[in-house]
Image (cartoon, rainbow, N blue to C red; front, side):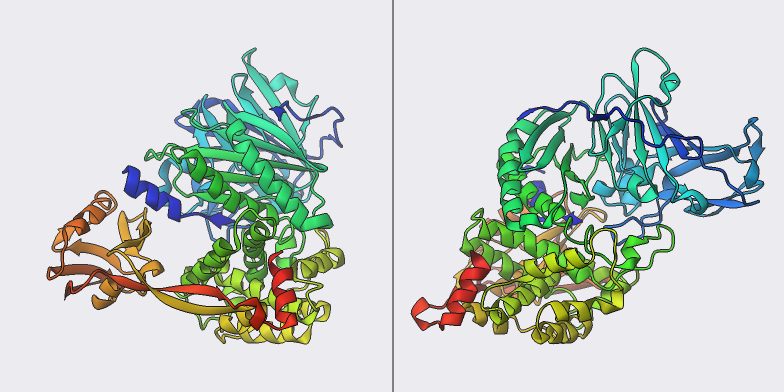
Length: 633
């Protein structure tokens, strides 16, 4: 999963191939009366709710429990999809109601379960009311009758533990005016009688078990879709742009270039034959999605971004987030622990190795761009420095494995986003260690290939044994690094590793502005609370340090003028009026307490800019030269 915050805030401040054909498998696979059967009705939508009918395989116990997921793979947060379910009713074959008792948000006990024929319930979508729940938009659902449906199926279909590993047959009734996009094959010949009238169509899908159900999102609407080939991979890009601002045609060149580069970088490590990029572009209306980023699946990714982004910004953002999700094919979708392989949607046991699942994935998403010349080495170095700066806003003395294992709880939960910052830097250090010790012959990608060959998608590793296995595949220095800095809580001195590749981690003084540098704001949005807070970008800004501003301080007022997201853009206009000798008073909220401080402007603000500086080649050893070349090229 990749969350994307920066562009949205900048946006708020400034703005306040061939046509795809349905994929059909004409062979009906293993259809029989013992399967779980689910009907989702996208035609008879009332009160913005979708009706679901679930016909489970035979239940042999007197009582059973129906579950909706508390959590899904890839999100690392308790989202409680049961909160969107209403009117759950259980029936016998003759239509008699069975007793149902809701046990908690995500579970319902059904009595006389041996008589159970079906359950019915209504589903509310997540997009409509994102302020009142924590579901990340790409993991959410949308219900807009005759306009658009986002079917992340974990939001529509639950399970019984007794039948969870039995195949599922899903039938979706939809209007003919809507097209669909998914990586999962459609099946012909099931339930044609469910069609209510000539204006409806039915799509039917077959899944071997519940884990497959949750792994294959479907998007319906007036979609713009194109396919292209990357070697032996068929890629679908499908775009829902409600105001027709963006098209699949416009995005196709950048996505194709990106995925060609990824495939070249990955080599034969990837075995995916079909991949879908499902893009939902939000209007930013109050009842529309606002959690921007993407969520990975084995054969697809769901991307949610603002529709009004300029094409160039949209392309740049999608390269970042889609490449991240595609690299998840390596881990955790292929290389993963028992906790992920046997995922418990209701009472999850978390793995210790988010440093690999998210950190290595994010590192690859940055590294491939410089190795395949999509970005310059200077840009790559700047991104690494940004990650060091961003990582400093989290607890640098926290064991990464302990954080990962307890990521659903505080204080570990608040440090989750560090998996994209320090997690990537951990993988960078491991990559450099392997390069140095192998005389540049191998790197961390070779490690992941070895792990893929040893384990693969169907053979999980034992969580507590991974570091031992990684050490055996690499060098004792890698094992020592992991024990000190990942299992242990010793902070990493990144300069020690940069010197192995001929770099110095230094700083220079630069002229800057009061609340931004080069149009990159020192402020970030909190959409849920309508607040703006100081991020780590301004850590070394002389004006902010004179006021003792700290990262995560919430800006309350400047010279007694209140500020929030509604008038945030005016902050930058206000500073244009300031001059040497003026007194500025700023009020912030820190840990719930308001703090006011003053400063007199003595000079134009300056800042220290951390940089990676390339040591001249004539001053490098042969090993530094070859290690650097292998790392970047």
